[in-house]
Length: 330
Image (cartoon, rainbow, N blue to C red; front, side, top):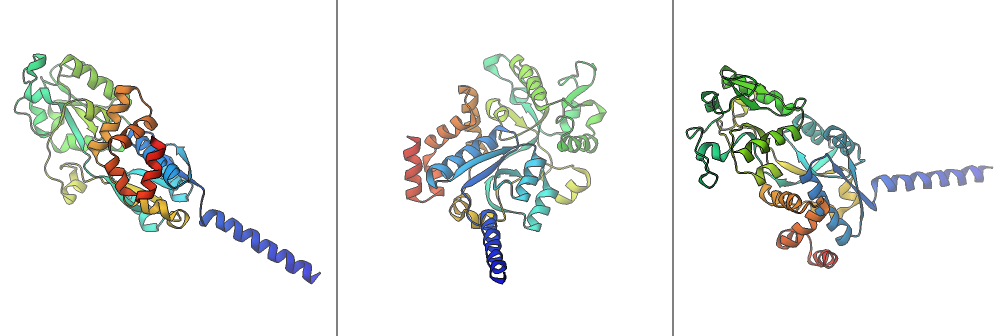
């Protein structure tokens, strides 16, 4: 009987050890997070191609809201996150990093912008389209209050309209505060669209008609890549002023690649590759434009991008891994 109990004990320990190996040891399938925008899908596809063809891993993608996928990342259900916009989820990002739930391994890109944009022809005109400058002295966000007639609200003649971020977005509250600190509400209305697509449709309609438009947007996106827009200036970022009134340009917003805390041991070779992953807003927008012009999926854009920029992605991995990936692409 004692021998039987001892044998069962050994078997139980073996089973537990095996379970522990599955969750904390090496893995066969790498799960990436998709929070719903095209640029993260392109970067996921680039990384997946290298993980699968170069390193021999299977990959999967878990889609959901930013909040849901970041929580899944903290819990270990998502191994890799190719685009965490650090300032947009600052509190959660800092909390998760300090708790050691996930690790930042590289900066994907840090040259992105956000704020209030106008079509460049509003300031400079466009001779080819027969458009005269509408507000040639417009430079800053605060200047906007001088031009209600240029950006006239069609539903409130005599006052201008600024397109805010969609209702429900955290950044919409920031634009609200900027309205107050710059005195924009003296002459301008603060209009919140119901969705990002509604804001884009409003911009495209105005742009194609050569009308004035001003509103919130960010890069890298297809919108900022496809249309000639000018980001209006604000005072240089100052953390104290920003925290008090939001009366400066937006703070730096590094867009980083992160991995779950267990990942360095689960896939050390891929972990090393991801430490080298670095692009830019301009490089990202090239893929987004390709998607638009060719009605392509992110996976197709990623393949095109890798063929166009072989010198970049091959620098992230060893020569033998690069050769495997190139063979697969060809």
